Image (cartoon, rainbow, N blue to C red):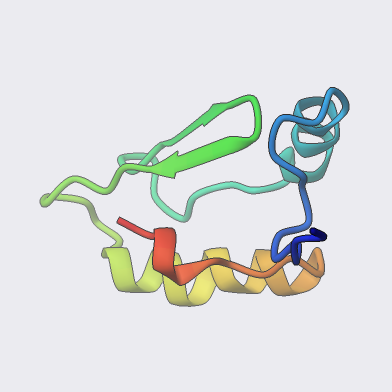
Amino acid sequence: MPLHINRSIIQDSGVSPTLYIIMERDLKTLSRSSPFCKYADDTYHIVPGNSDIGLNEEFNINIRNWARANKMIINLSKTK
């Protein structure tokens, strides 16, 4: 039975980690104190409580604009 793919990168694909690394290399944070942890085809954004840029600004302005520019869809059901 075919399944609907709702992301731009297919999980467990042999090519996906390489393609993701190329696609996300321009994804940067607004603040130096809130790093991205990037591994294979996953990205986690860590925003400490004392960051000079809040989580809402990082996500709603920076990350969403990056995703839109790269024609990617953010799956909010997986957002922690």
